[in-house]
Image (cartoon, rainbow, N blue to C red; front, side, top):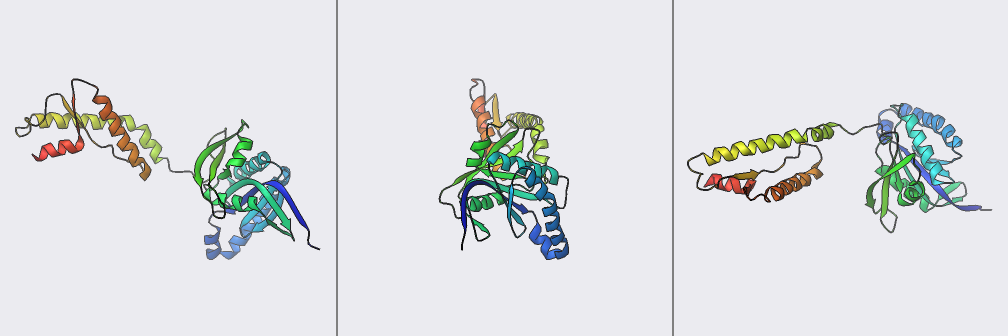
Length: 269
């Protein structure tokens, strides 16, 4: 006789980072890593009254009675594994219906949790908006909106959030490079250097024989701000900075403001 159990649950889906590559390189080590995962995760899951539903390849499907339990358990897993360089997980969490039938597990909650997992950073956790709503008033847990995505097999876009604790940064083993932060901290000096260069350039142009008729007194040119980080999306930030500087300086009655392109045109005359 076929038995079917349907219930609402908080679903956690985990996946080992780099497992497929490891399997192709060293099958014995990969299988040993699965054993290590079982030994480490099962006691933690039991401590939070979670249910180990099944393994899917190197991934694990777990259910909890509440989103708070699911998230706090996942944070504890990532905290413990942060000291284990061999075992790094991504985790996705969603609340939804699950169906247990003939020893297998199905349902919307399973599908969405598995789609959220790849969106997490290595060592990180991604949750759906529904989970976010259940934990947003917990002072020890914080969420950060990541993006809205249309996940495969889901009819409408889902808001995705990252999870981290109030103790510090997101629970990620592979920390992002700090170079952009260093650049940001030096930004006042960079801007100061740019402005000094602009003043020297304008002074030189004003005192060159061929250009004095083209540039008015008390003139200033604002060049583009160069994106020195590795993030292409910050190119637009440089454009906005240039526009803000030009707008602000244009408010002065004593200055004639030139764009960098206008200055180059004058130089060619």
